Length: 242
Image (cartoon, rainbow, N blue to C red):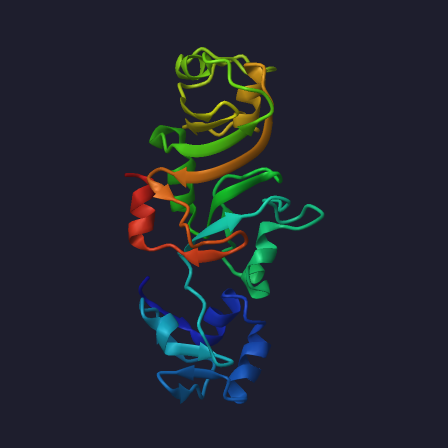
């Protein structure tokens, strides 16, 4: 990010409060830049990459600037929505993050009963690059099944001819690896509604548990527990398209 922004507008866009509330924070000495309390909320400051390490609000480092991308370990029972009833993925973030402008959005969705790697960003260009069918970004899932695999599922998924119930276009080829008689790892490049669950239903099985562990070459970190998130580095983002 480059350029400059008024301090009050920057903090308001990051969800810290209204313009008036930001002015109050400044008056109370709660906004500190390079170790010195800010004097004027209308001051323009350079939007440098190191700003979150230099600007503190109420004693805490500034949240990431716009253009942020997050990886989150989505737990079961949480919905990828801004509005639905019940627990939402956005509830796992600091409350002010829901007031950011531009807003954070999930990159695709995981259904309520699916866990695993979920990406969020306020960068519309990045979001569309990841979900674009032209990019063929693979998403890998581990499925726990109600019944033993029959042995022909991998070939059927790879054929490019499998049809889902209620659809008229066959699925793109997918790669399945058997992990045990009742579990499999499946990589898909599409994002149809409940696709993995419906694929196994199409071959006579039922998914009891589903977990996404990879997007592109970006794996869910082993030390990122359910409900936890972290900011993605440029290396993380590049791995999606590797």
